[in-house]
Image (cartoon, rainbow, N blue to C red; front, side):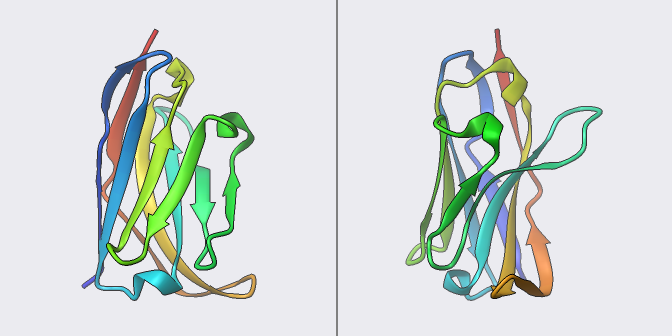
Length: 121
């Protein structure tokens, strides 16, 4: 049974920092591309950052230079370090796992239950 469990969300003032964690089980973690997505009220879910099995990363333009995604394959955990937070970063943040062969996704993708991040002005 695949489980992705996020933690680290909370309430922070603008300009502050948070570190989100996502612990994975039930998958061969090192094979998976791990992603962080977010969904604000009334908006669609959007990609925040992604890290491949070879540790290539990509970020949404809105978070470049402020957020950093990293992974610990030994601990089956992916992190999102969020600095210089802005009120517009307020959303539920979700962890995802998907496997790719080249650019083709293979099989199912998996999602965590989400963690709330609220940035006050």
